Image 1 (cartoon, helix red, strand yellow):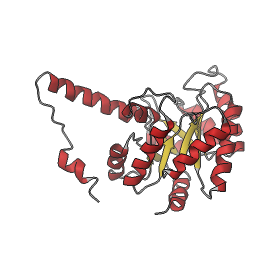
Image 2: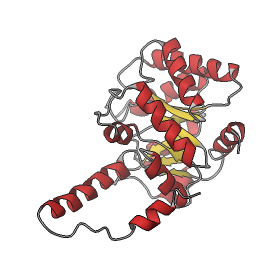
Image 3: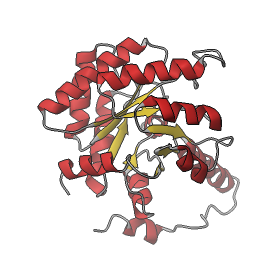
Image 4: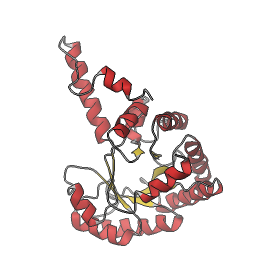
Length: 265
């Protein structure tokens, strides 16, 4: 399947039903997730940073991220979206250049976030990214993330209104999706979905409605975020700790042969 086909497929996956993304952090985890039936692969910025020995939060050198994206694209046959944090720069033109490199690595989608920055800055980044992608003939899926809920950027009585104001700003700039991590209340989800004008992405958390309820509310994308990579690290810590204390370090589900076979194609 060509990159054009992957891009079209990824866009279509946001039109109906609920796209579940079990975020990966390297080629091995991506191939494993794909083998379990994933319709697409998305990365987690935290997991990718940790796998490369950096803290989360745009500390990872861009080239390391590009290399990770390329290594994932090499082993999967489904669309790839890359968590691009804030674009790894403040200047919109530089951000677009960075995204061009991740497109060259094989990605057909990105997440890009506002964080504590002005919504106008993210809108400018989106505009530059979409212009660059169009010039390359790539229908890049730009998932605009707002941290209104995650960072508490508005009071409880204002957070829906602030979130929707940012949705309009990012939609007008050319965003294809809208990611609101931290949003969990069913009534607030319903309001955001109804007014955002973009496919809405929610991040998994313990107090979230079930996947079936989210789909009924109109949510189009559910992301694991860093949860799976955190659980994997926690599991490795348990096994390694047991081994270092002189006990068995054997896993319960996968073995060497089954893991190695994932890459034998």
